[in-house]
Structure formats: structure tokens, C-alpha cells
Image 1 (tube, rainbow, N blue to C red):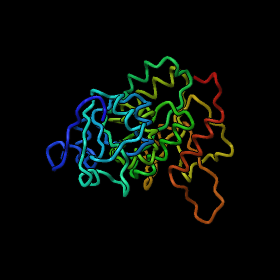
Image 2 (image 1 turned 60 degrees about the horizontal axis):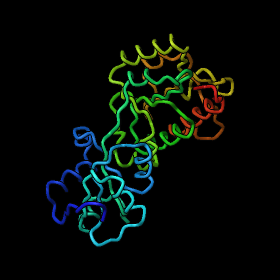
Image 3 (image 1 turned 45 degrees about the vertical axis):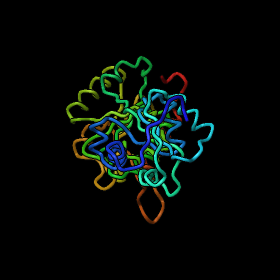
Image 4 (image 1 turned 60 degrees about the vertical axis):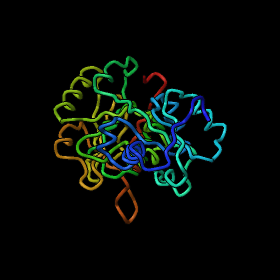
Length: 279
């Protein structure tokens, strides 16, 4: 299979332990700066986003599809590893394992990288304050991709955005997202000040008790939408950075929206006002 002789894993050797840790251990992913990706859609999106594939795993004795063979041929420099079916099942999080599992180097983005993008005349940013649910974050990344958000900022101690559950929930959109990890509020404040001076950026926070109804707002880029933590909402400090704080009118008995749903509504409100001249 592929263009070179594959490595073989039939016992829990050092390579297996690294792979298992990349799937299960946040610290290992951070240390190695690699992600563990399972599932056809996630792998396709990773390839389309041009992340560097480091390993390609497949089951010993199971024939690959034309697509699977094409992935092996596309990455001759990646480690190609034939894994015994029982160990492959142990590495997989699925009841029916995918035909391929890959690892890849994480592509990072910084504040400085953003400043070098010439097309961001009317940027559309999203900030998530201390996200704590893997599925919510992955779903929100799908919406951010669908509605053409330019960058997603993650603030504070939060879930690991490269956890396989996030990758799966995002359908691989995480690989197309410029993710920026905000190390401190002072870094964020400096960035917001420079963007306000550069393009007139507006900062809009969200809260179920916010003073402004979304009914009465027209959200336009350049803009940063801030979503609070699922349980605690926006911090007081973040609220102080907002030009306005909006609520989404609701009419049901339970006066609450899942944060990924609320975020998607707000992103759509901005996206519908985007024009081809926005960027």
C-alpha cells in the first residue's frame, strides 16, 4: 500500500503509546503540537486546509478505498503505519473504525499574523470566553465557517480545542479556522484598541439580560462578537470592553439558548449584512 514500505504495529510499542496519548491526552497534543484525526470528513478538511500530515494509519488486512490509497500517495513523507485490527480498534473512538486515522502538525495563528492579512478591511471576529463544552465549541466552529468569520479568539482556561471530539463536532471546520489563543486580557485590550483605530471595530457582547434587544440592532462588520462561558456568562472585565450588550428575544417557557445556538444566531445577523466589498 502507498509508495513505500509501511511500518507495522502489532503490539503496544512506543509508537502506539504516542498515538494513544495524542488521542486522549491534552498535554501530549500540546507538547507534540499535533492533532489526532479520525473520520473521512475531518481528514478531507485537514487535507484541504493543507495541514502537514505526519502519520497515516490503516488496518492490517483491510483493503483501502480509492480515496484511502490516494491519501497514502499524496503524503509519501508521512509515516505510513499498518496496525493490527485489535490495536486499531483500541485507538479508534468509533464503534466502526474509519479506514484511516491521521496525525498532523497544528497550524497556529497569532495577533501578529492577523495584522498581516491585507484583506481584513472590515473584519468579522468571534471571541468565546472560557468555553467548557467540546460539542458546543465544535458546533460553533461550524457556524463560524458557514458565516465567514475571519478569526475565532479563545480566552482563558478552557477545553482543548484540538480534542478529537471538537474536531468531530466541527466536521473538520476547525482546520479552516484562524484560532487565536488570548493569553491575557491586556493582550486583548491592546488588539481591540489597535483595531478600533484601524477600522472602527465594534465590540458586541451577548447576555440573556443584555440591555439591547437583537430586534433593535443591526450588526455589521467590522465587529467582534463575544460569547460568554456556558455557565457563568461573560466576565465583568469583558463586559466593560463591550460597546453594547445584546439579548436574543425568546418566547418559550425555558428562557435559555444553548451557547452554540445563540452564537449562530448572532453570527447570522452579521453575515446577512456582509457584502462582497466587506473584505
